Image (cartoon, rainbow, N blue to C red):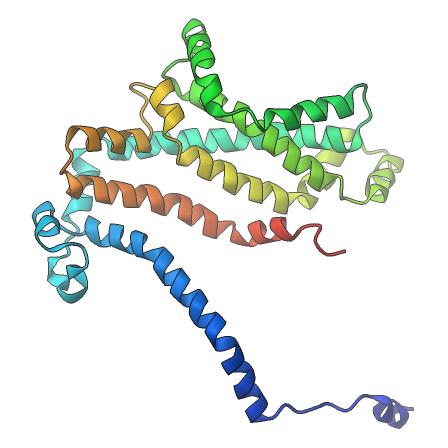
Length: 295
């Protein structure tokens, strides 16, 4: 039987060296183009990093590209001065609190609402979901003045909780829309089996929905964190003394237009932190993007 099975197997076709070379050469233009586009895309970030290592005089006299040919011009003094002599570290901490709170809260509420819209029957469910979709088109600028007036009456203006609530409110429609569409793709048999075993809806949500929906939740967390961390408009309107890092950098730029030795390292630090979050959850992000694309 083993001999018959061996004869039945299809012969393995060995690819010649010339074929491999031709295949690589055929893909080379595309690869070179992608490398060029990627390098071009990184130029502003690299330029910002080199600028953060230069004194203001060296930057004005030479430009950031001179660091490549003259490495002795680079110094870490800008980061030392930034960390010890300015309010930027406090602003980074404030931004982290707002971004974390403005990410966890809409994900928690959005996951609960997404599960309800996907698998629970209640009156007006479809119309409510249409209303959620309609909220996606409401621009932030339209709500700034009404919420500013409301925050003044509720004493939420210029508070961390007020900023977190604002980002939560405007992140919820997209969170519900994304998670509902992901949860509805989970096989119905999973929930029916759990209900037969006596599991409550809360237990099903915690033990089944959240683990299965981790790729979509991680993707949503990345988007929401980046939107909240990089926000400038809402912080300018809704905060005065509670300044995130974007407002702190903007204030320095407005007061000291040539203070590049402070603005450059602060800008680079505000870029590195969300970039690190993205790379930390990159695996889940890719899974969330591809979820549902393959049966």
